[in-house]
Length: 369
Image: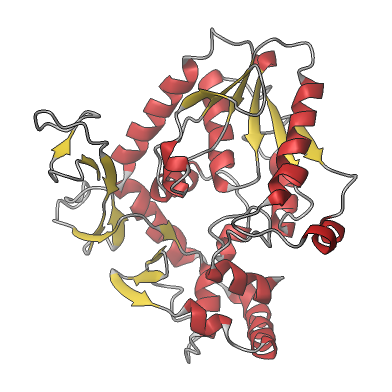
C-alpha cells in the first residue's frame, strides 16, 4: 500500500496536496507491505487478494532472500542445520530478516568485526555446500507471492508502459538510449522499454567504472544473448586512461563527502560515449532506472527532466515511484535474467568498494570477493 501523508496534519491525500485548507506542505510518501499468514508471503494489500484473510503490517519495503544468501545466513549464525532456512519463506527489510512472517534481526556490525580467517572458514563451508541447494520450495513460494500480488504487478506495469509510449511519437528509436548499469533497476527499465516500444533496437550504454562486481561483468556478457534481449546493442563507456588505485595514492580514496570517482570513472566516460554515439543529433532521449526510494537526494527527482550534465538530453525514469518490492515483483513475475550478485545478498551492485555501500555489502565482499 502506498499513501501520501501531510507531515503536519497526518492526513492522507490522493492528490499532491493536503486536504486541509491553506496547507502548502509537501506530502510524504509512505509505503506499507503486509504479511499473509495463510499464504506465507508478503502482500501489497492489507487483505490478501488470494485467500481473503486480513494481513499484518510487516515492513515499509522488502526484498526476497535467495537460497544462496539463506545458506550463508545459516553459516554466519552457526546454525546446526546449514539448510535450516531453505524451505522457509524468507525476505529482508534492512537488517531484519523476515522468516515465515517473524522478524529476526542480525548484528551486521558484530559479524563485520569477525577476523578474516574466520570469514574465510565460513566461505569454505559455503563453497562446499552451495551446489547442494534445492530451489524447489523457493520456486513454489515465489509462485504464491506472484499470485498474491498480481493486481499490483498489472497496475505498475500498465502505468509504466503507458508512460513510455508517450515518447514513441516524440523521438525516433535512433534518438533513444537506455542507461544500463547491470543492476536490477536498469534491467527492469530495459525490459519495460523494449516491451512498450516493441523493439530491441534501442541502444544501451553500459558505464564500466573499472570497479564493477565480477558478477556484473558476467551478467553484461550474457545480457544481449538472453531471449528477452537478444540482439540488443550495448556500448561500453570506460575511462581507459586513468587508474583508480593510482589516483587514490594522489588524492586519497573517495568518501561519501568527496566521491570524485563518479566524475572520473562514470559520468565523464558516459558523456564521451553519448557524444560520440549521437554526435549529429540535436535532441536525444535517455531512459534511466532511477527510483525515488533509493535515497534522500533521489526522492526529489522529477520523472522527466533535462539533463544538467549533457545538453540536448531528456532524461525519463519510468519506474521512479517503484519500491524494491515492485522491482522484484516484476523480475520474479517475468522471470527475466538478472545479476547474480543479488542472489548472494547484495542490495546494490555499483562499484564493489563504493563508500555508499552498507555494512552488509562490506561483509559479503569480504566473504565472496
